[in-house]
Length: 470
Image (cartoon, rainbow, N blue to C red; front, side):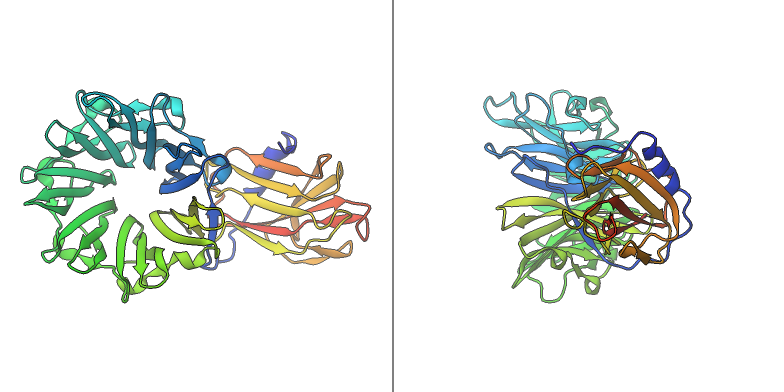
């Protein structure tokens, strides 16, 4: 483990950042954060809310699924897999809880897997079985204290919602349907499917079975509504030749076809703040994570932002906070041979401004991790510096670079210079367990100066970083 700064420095750093004034407007750039943790073989991010991401990993050797939750970095990964279960998945996250399913070998069919709707509170030991007595099921969406999903009766699956306990189960199954399934909720509306006359129909509810609305396009073979937020619903419909991503705004007649011109197929999986995400299948280039802003013409190819080794990408959910947009999903890493959970962020939180000044071991490297969302962790890491040396962290709210010890100091004028020391390995780490509230909308410039006899004037400089707080 890297050495950390003293306990007195961590609150001083957090307090220093709260002194900032408004930052300049941020550019509409994107960064991609790899959430893939050490250990598992594959990882998949399926949802995001309040800065937390949920999904699942596949374990090396067995390839069985384990429910997972992150807080913005690969290192924040928590394995939620309940003891005794064979497989599990977290399909949604809200209000500090994660919902999904776990699979055990239970009656009524010995030796065959049966899924239980599950609710966690951030740890594997915190699991609650949401399945009503005598029933099984899956939780597939959540918002606040409400979870949406399905419970299986002896004859059919039935859409429904919970409010945190098995006893709270509320049946949404419409009388006209053969079977039904709820995929998501925003606390007011629920969306999913109902099978009517042999075809699956995109559906919406407002908390009761009697409130069911059929969104199925008349020319479609099948349709599904998969996500809902703020009066918008997204999903897809299948037509004789192609599948189209769709957006509704509360009625069947409000349908907007998001399918981009020239695409071989498309599907919308998440919605938030007038934007939608999913994937588009192109005749050349394969399946590509995608973003829309309410029209087919607004389509943005998120796959194009990935490194060349990635392919077969999907975007599953979207969330906005402050002036930032967060999209989660996954892509196949062709170099490593596995799937990586990914998060697209715009504008980027951390920007490398360069200007290092080498010492005896080369140029010290400063990096930052964390979304800078209140309540979530963040950290700064310094590597490649002189061992056991005095290091000063310069913190500024603006940047007027100036010559310094043969190099360039970027964070000027500083609001603070924080003294620390590197480890015997020339490393240093500063951790803030919970990013403070009230710091939104400013930019912080950071750079280390390190005593180093091998530097041109006895002082080496790390690269400078800018942290843009959403």
